Length: 520
Image 1 (cartoon, helix red, strand yellow):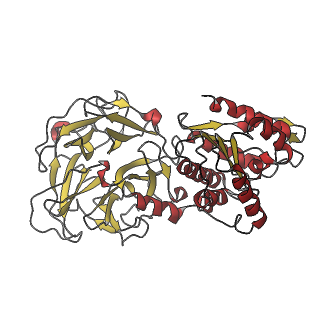
Image 2 (image 1 turned 120 degrees about the vertical axis):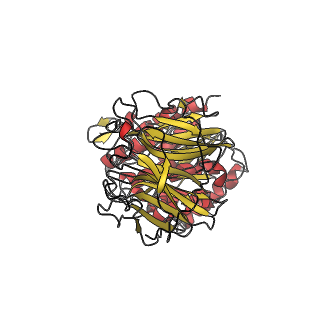
Image 3 (image 1 turned 180 degrees about the horizontal axis):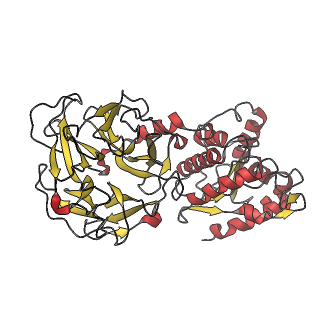
């Protein structure tokens, strides 16, 4: 890497404020970072779901260890996304690549940011931000140079005694010489910038092990060059070891996310004044949290919603992509459905049922007597036999349902996706749930578990575990109807002889389960 004469350091404090877009992305790695870049998306900053089916978007190719840990992304003024990452545990370099869509990436580069220090132990957790005032990018990271800061030698694990270092670039071809960026008087790591509520802060982790600190602190950052203000009291609770802080402003709230790495889960704090912090970990939903594939140290950024939509489509399983293949050939059903809509003469419905043949059979066969007693005057049946999630998704997006305005929409779908994996089935149901919410914005949603069936009982049970997590008990309510369908001989209570559709008893069980949500 060419290192010309020293230029003044500058930075635009790395904002996580939502004004950059109306959707959010989280870059992260899993395990040790060996398989590269992972992305999660959210529309509200609380409920995050993995993109591309949890598969990597970019495999690491630089650095001796070929790792991609701590990925940090910033969007430049031309719309290009620039990413840096930790390329190995004990190396003098970091990784870099760029992309305009986060799917197709430039050739990866190894940036030897600490090659001038022959004894350096590491270059960890790089961050990147753009300084629009000076028209350059700032890259900063944590490194240990043995003997450099003797007063705090031995305060971190092993030989580590970190300080923050930085370089700047305009073109990612030439870089200013690396210089010391931040020394708070202790071993420091994982620095990041937060711009929120009209002000700016530097957030850092105290990496001191002896005695253990491992917490996050904030310092005012009124000037892009520093000096930074005095560090405040820790914002993470005592005894909780955290790393990788990143922040978003969502509405009036500033949300700080962190990797509670010793507890093996992601956590979050929320504040409206950057002084008083509320632990909102319990309100969060992170991909694969608590498992071996859980999110690890990454960066949350606000992006245009169109980018998230594109990413979802590019890597989405077939279960989530609208498909008219079950509706278009069904001319008899189209005639029946049009007659059904016409017979209602535009009358509103208090409750709408969305699903496949199990839903469609409310209005004929075993379901009809139950429908007449419970829903004929207040219900609308939007079921179609043989529908998979992708087919129901297409109907929701393309068939007009005028003047219904339901108070409750009931979603039961997925039983026909028997060839798909539990993850794919759950993703498809989630897509149908979202489309139902868009279709009926004022309605509460009763999300039904997928019922047992002779074709794939175990698979559906695994999918149901994921569906239960979609409920917030405010607008979306999960009803585990499958739990009521207990084994009975070689069948299940509530199912018909085909071990797939419902008996009259099954429809009664379903109607009974919905009544609490229909009460004023």
